[in-house]
Image (tube, rainbow, N blue to C red; front, side, top):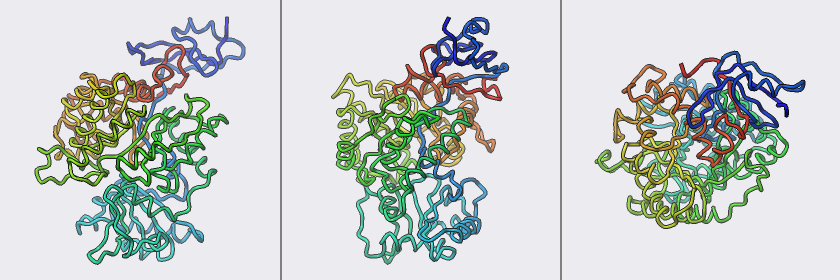
Amino acid sequence: MLKADLVLKNGKIATVDRNFSYVEAVAVRNGWIIDRGTNAEMEAYIGPETQVLDAGGKLVLPGANDSHMHAVHTGYTLSPAFLDFSGPSYDCMDKILTKVKAACEQAGPGEWVFGCGFVDGEIRELAAEGRIMNRYDLDPVSPHTPVVLTDFSLHSMVCNSKALELAGIDRSYPEIPPSTGIIDRDETGEPLGRFHEWGTQNILCEKCPILTDAQIEDAIRRVQAALNRQGITSHTDILGEGGEHVFRGTWGSRPMEIYEKMAEKGELTARVSINVFSAIGGQESYDAIIRGTERIRLPKFQDRNWVKADAIKFFVDLGAPTWLRRDCDPDNTRVTAWGGDEQQDTQEIQRTIVELHRMGWQIGIHSIGGGSMDCCIEGFAQANRLYPGKDLRHFLIHTDDQTEETAKKMAKNGILAAIQPSAGDLVFQGNTASLSDKDHIFNYQRYADLGEIQTGGSDSTCFPMNWRLGMQFAVTRTTSTGFASHPELGMKREDAIRMYTINGAYQEHMENVRGSIEVGKAADFQILDKDVMT
């Protein structure tokens, strides 16, 4: 009888198959599952060269999937020189400036200081003055070194005067279209060093030294090792022309080639699905997205089980639910990354969706508020009517403003929801009041029961990569600070695990290859110290 390379036995192995069945043991050969069943049944596959791993009765799950993250960028933020300002401890400017000053003193000639993670509203001085951080806050500790910091959402960047000088941005810099973003200025027209959205961040960082190929490889190794420590064996990344200069090239096109080279050399430890950020210059418009998509040049991807790129990513809301439904926004404060009025944006966004669908691309859209979601869902419905028969599995990312009616429409049109349950800590106590369902938001189980397929991601670096934190929130509807809302609406554990395993594989068109522990699938496993099923 053919022998296995590996037999995993004595486990509580949740296969996450159609019946969510459990087995004791599984046999693996050449990285693929060849059988599963009882310990006794798998004994036949054990030979002299077989590695036998005793799970000791612990829970075994398929490797987890992170359905939405910025992986190369996260790997860069894990480097020693990068400044991390995330967490509640950074609640005053002195703590931030002390760290910036030390980094500037250590920086060599020509080096820029980068960091991210701060929340303007949680910094005491800024909150008291009702403003956000600007260049003049940073200048006293960084007169000669360019400094660029991004807030926790990544959508807004602040720099000091030295960075503005090197970028050639001063009072005479021309105004830019709203679809490119916003550069904050004072009443005299002087730039304040605050840049909102990717087009403006590209403008600022174009003069910044980008990472070398070797540094990008190191970033990929760091982030994949960090993901593996969380049991994650596959993930997305957002890369392309739209982020060519953003975050030192970690959002650009070059990392696609580097992923593929590392895959060919067997150096990847997690599988990668790339969402292509095709918008030229990061500008959100039909013309920039479609022209950018037409000139995409992808690697050949020798093994698509390791690296592939099938989806186009673009943005509608800004870093929060900035396009709400009319009944939730009586003052009409609506704003989008597209920069037009509601009718203009609706027509252009839906036209973009239909054309990308016609071209055969899967589409992932950053969509948070209810108005944004309703616009995109109708665009997908139009695309399905005009060009039926395409199994593209479009998805909306974030979808904070879901309702039961929204979930029904998404299920009907085959639209997935790529959600970030670990963001619940922030949204539950922050944006809840502005959303449609108020305290019934994030009713994940109800959405699943209505047929909507949800996938779980972290949006790292914005939130932790620990998928179990997301599961905990989905199941308990309780934040890490103990704030709870309608815990009776909590998600079933089985469905929460599906969200981070087989559903993620489905989003990537890989459900026949991974996402569950079944014969013929990739042998991606995680063994948990604690049994999350009990």
